[in-house]
Image (cartoon, rainbow, N blue to C red; front, side, top):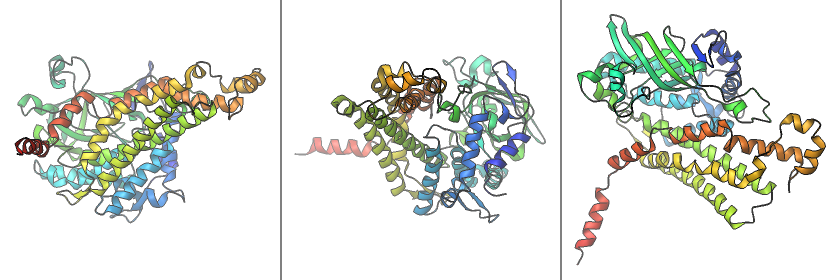
Length: 483
């Protein structure tokens, strides 16, 4: 099977029956028919259709080394600079389609799986079967073009103790039994974005684990189909209120669901396990395989697309209401431009300084990507602030599409026009600004970006510890000793 079309994605989803609880009900029937998911599911189908469009298919696909069929570029194992460039271009096509608002498109986990499978020998050091399992699973996802999501962290109950120790160790998902055919997992995990309409769930190592017997039941990596018996998703309320796209232009297209994952004695066959009972292996899962680097390459490409969107939106806003001549407005625009050019520079540097890792995979330099992933969670918080400030009171009373075409149409045409737009055009633009900076959807985006890679404070601590400052200290010591 080659790269999927949107129709093929929807057909597979229709045949799946994951257990999803949302707003007091358990979803019955196909997920793509439920009001909370049907609009974003259509958007994901559009992404798959792009793989077959005349404009994008050459960038979004490459020839499978096993089947000879076209498969998604995000599975491509890069060995040349051109491969890295093509991967980034493919990320960008999908990111542009959502203005960077979709954080869990398939290329994110596909990039991780590519790196993990390339490092199969690293998994095999614990058990030769694990190396073969991860390689075989990657090929399955690639050839079937499956949409994967993942879950990482334990429930947030008592932050004063490790996740594995909360409630006496009885809450976080853990291995409670092993048999001849696999493991049994019980407990909960968060936070699984897009889980209700994904094909597969990757359950990957969480925070740093101690090499103690008590941590062994929490040391694992495996994958399960989304409708595996005993697997349940508790979805938050939808931010897509099933309104016209005019009124909720982002939420009606890009509202990814976030879920708590409950494992009720879920059986996982051994052939779907990649690490078991080995804290040291789990602690090196992302760094030793270069997985985190390739995932971050995708993320920085997406946030570049998102920043381009913000710059375009702010520019249309300032033109519409005639405020771009003010220096404080120019200062705000310059801040967005600077962020955009910084992200572009990080990507360029990461690709220019790419090197082959120990498994022969051309891997972007992590230093610039790591800088970007530490900076952007905080930089993005400024964008909604800038939009709110520049839109000001104009964002407080934005009529709906029914108003634009209803009894108030003449008043909207007369009193809500702008320097460059008619009344209806201005309303449409301001609805988009509103959905980017004020709505519930906008608030979720800001929170999502802030915690995308984890707690920014802990990330900063890890960043400092991992950064080699000795050469810089040596320079200062040499200066102090200069006669």
